[in-house]
Every structure is written in structure tokens, then in C-alpha cells.
Image 1 (cartoon, one colour):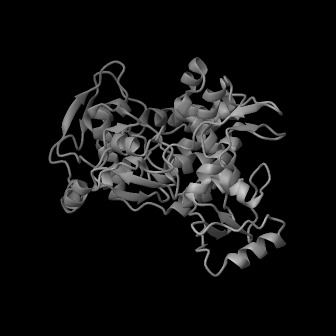
Image 2: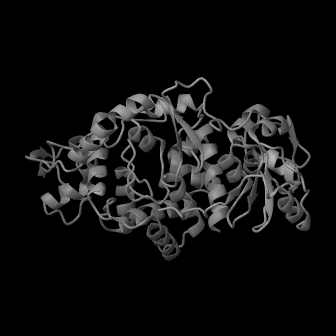
Image 3: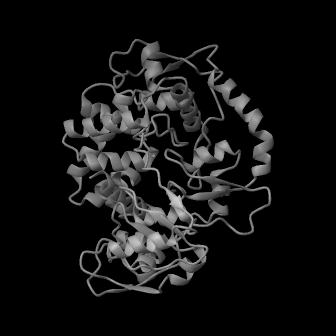
Length: 445
């Protein structure tokens, strides 16, 4: 999962502006390719990339590169006008292979051709995606999964264009669908990787429309639900406040407050804790499935409680959260570009984001990782507090960058877990995650 809202893009149809676009392209040394009638022209804004334009217009990076004679890095210059080939010509333009040039990376090649690092690595038997050689000839797999919706989608299906802060879980809830159904309808290989401007076919849209009014009323009702009673939990050996909060569908902060705990990391065997909000807890705000995995009821219950709490609280804007991330990263010696890229990928800088795994806030930190961050901070950290949420994510990143010699492995550790990275290396979806974060870092550098 506040992300920096991308600059608005002005798009013009090729009617009266084709000649001007061609002339402007020639003036900047770009091949003045005249697009087909279905093609479009785009005036490049600061921050635009060929990959982003391909996703926005339903084209491919390779087609844009070929149509505009771009260099091997698909460099775009603000103020120039580029031709965006139609989907049909984009499909025809994709070559079957690519020869590696000096300075290229697998992530850059994947972005250029509208595919993924993992897909290229699999197609070429590459064990370590960070190692490719100049002159190496790479077989290019098919285009990026999910670039177009399934053509045989039900007539009742609707289309959703991804905006900043969207997650597949949030989209599924909004349309009364499921993550699995949307992923299947759009052939998404990794449901955690969706892109601003991406158009997603939403199955069961008819049911969504019928249920939307009821859903809105239900959400308002569950959000305002408060506990009518509390229970008592006796601490057993091995208990942590985080585990207790998850088990009872509440939060560490709520239990600490109800029991006047000065240090939420210190509880004692036999201690009797009042558990607030154990009945009448909100439901339906967070789904129970993500990336094909269904989470335990107690974890989802805690996620719903946290989502309701954040929904009922004023939180900073995405821009304010982004600045908080920059300031905190600098204060703790973490690369601000890295911290921003992680938050952008995890939540889009959205402090109200909560996942079925009970990953909370802009930095998407789960309670057990919050306890680890509390130990590093030397005080209890409340993941529902924006400043603490950012602090937790930054402290975890600082620890990971000190643990791993390679930045890619530190990034992977945030997503996959440091122990799993050490034991198993990077999973396929982790490779894609690292590539996405690396691309975001270039934006925020």
C-alpha cells in the first residue's frame, strides 16, 4: 500500500493535432511517426514514464518506444509530444526477444516490454534476476497480466479504473465482489500489484449495483457500532498483547488504555486484562481473503476493528503522510526514496488502509512487527497513530537495510519477511514486489 498524486495527464485525439504533434516530435529529435486513426498523442508531463503511459492508454511500452524512436531506457522528456499506438498496433509491435545493453536491468526490461521480472526470469531460466549480461539474448514472454480485461466477461460486469490508494481488497469490497474473482477476471498473476490508471473488469457487477445501497447503509452501521460489554482475559505463558488483541478482535492500544498499561510490551502470567470491544465488533469493512489466502477469523476481526477505528478518526492527507514519511526517514538515517516507495507500494500513502492480514496504515505494519518496532523505539508504538505507524515502518526498514548487504533483499524482507528471505530466497511475487518498489524509488529520488 498518502501517495503523491501523479500529475494530471492531458490527452488529445489525433484529429487536428497530428501535424503539430509530428512537427514537435521532429523538433525534439524524435521520429515523427504519424499514428493510425485509432492512435493517440500525449504531451509528456513531469514524472511520466513509458510504462505508466502504456498502462493508462492500454498500449505497451515496446510499442511506444518503437513509435517514437526512444532510446534503450525509454526516456521521455517533459514538454515533448509522443504517439501512443493503439492496442492493436501495440500487440503487433512486441518482439519475441531482447538483447541486453550496457546499464540495463531486468526490472527496466520488464517495464519496457510490459511484462514482469518473474515472467522473464522463468522464460529464460534465470536463477538470480539481478544478474544479466551485456549481449545476453532474452526471450520475452507475453504482455503484462491484467493489461486488458477478459473478453468474455459477463455482460453485467463493470470496469474500475485504479486510482491512488486503491487495493484489490478495497475494490472488491466496493463492488461486492472478491479479490479472487477480480484477479481471475483480469488474469492478474499478483493481486498485490495493480497500477494507477489500470482498468479492471469487475465481475458480479449487477449484484454489486443491487447491493450498493444496502452495503453503504451496512457499512455506516458497522462503523458506528461500539462494544456493549467487555470480557476479561487471564494472561497465559507465551501471550503477547498483540496476540490477545487479535484473538478478541480489538487493538493493543484499546487494551492498554482499558487497563492503564504504561508499557504495552510488559504483561505478566496470571494478569487479568479487561478486553474492550469484545462484542458488537464491526464486520464487513475488511475482507478475509488476499492473494488467494484466507486469514483466520480472529485476525480479520482485529482488522475490522482497526479499520473501523481509522474510519472514525481524522487522519492526515496522503500528501501530509508522504511528508511525514520523508521527515521520519531522514531523522532515522533511512533513504527517504526507499521509505516513500515502500509506502506507495503498500498503501498509496493511505493511513486508513487495513489488509485482511491486519496490516495497518500507510506503512502496512502488522501488530507483531509493531511490537518489534516498539522494542527498537524503546516505547510502545500505536500503529493507529499516524506518526507511530510511520516510525514503525521506518525502524523496520532501517533494521532490514542493516541486516542485508543487498538493498533488493532488504526490500524483499519488508514484504516476505527477513527470515523467509534468508531461508528461501525471493519468491516469484516478491521479485515483482522488489521491481515495483525499485521503480517507485526512481520517482522519489
